[in-house]
Amino acid sequence: MTRVAAIDCGTNSIRLLVADVDPAAGEFTELDRRMRIVRLGQGVDRTGRLAPEALERTFDACREYATVIKELGAERIRFVATSASRDAENSGTFVGGVLDILGVEPEVVSGDQEAQLSFDGAVRELLGGDHLEKPYLVVDIGGGSTEFVVGDDVVRAARSVDIGCVRMTERHLTVDGAVVDPPAPDRVAAIRADLDAALDLVGETVPIASAATLVGLAGTVTTIAAIALGLEEYDSEAIHHSRVSAGQVREITARLLASTHEERAAIPAMHPGRVDVITAGALVLLAVMERSGAGEVVVSEHDILDGIAWSAA
Image (cartoon, rainbow, N blue to C red; front, side, top):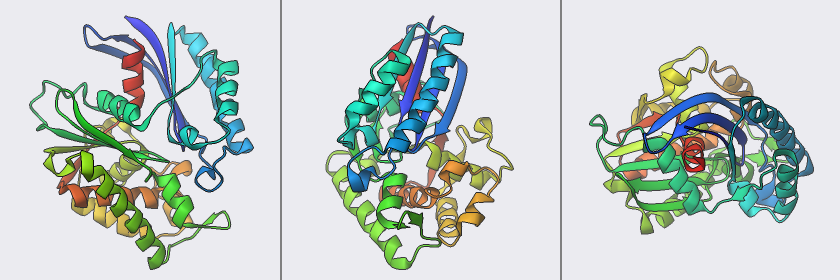
């Protein structure tokens, strides 16, 4: 067994997983898993740069994670950075800060690499099982981008497109730095147009309608699952491998579109850092289900973070 620390730094959140992993035996023992919403991608779609306050929030989380990693004695660390740091002109400042704090250089992976890691993390425990039909369509809705992967025992096709929940919120639902609540129909139509164009691109290389099982990853999907389940608080065990129908996703999306910030914040399982971006995220999930024809989404709490941990071992 190898003790590894995996860090996934995306547009909205930064997450840590420390685990004992034996890839040869397929053994995986989780020791610590945590998340902080740092919104590293704040304003990147508009300015092309990482904001100083966003960098400091991220570095503060890295300091916390460095303490945990040292206490648990991880032998290997892999830090993967995704959409926001790919897009930013000043990504060197981010890389240097992480290196100073954690002693490792963040890997700014490509969209295709991100898709592969997401697939590995989500489906490794499903392989060989009979309860979910193959091929899988794994969809990871992030803050800046969304990854689409079709595969069975291995990846067959993958594509990353820039339709994350933070990016769509900042582009279409924000005026003078404040999210419009509830959004006007023309703003919603603009998001849907972006989603349609992005899904057209995905369809050029990834046959999403051919998949037998849709597997959804990341905070947008798990939050929608928590709402569908009527949870009074976030419960990862109840959410993991739950199934949410297309009708439920459509109903929840309509509810979110009609809600105010205060109404969304009052949803029991809603993380405060997702209140302003969950509406755009729900629109992404709904568009994916409509385009793929999926009648339901199987929700996975295991995602790119787990894929990073497996790869580090």
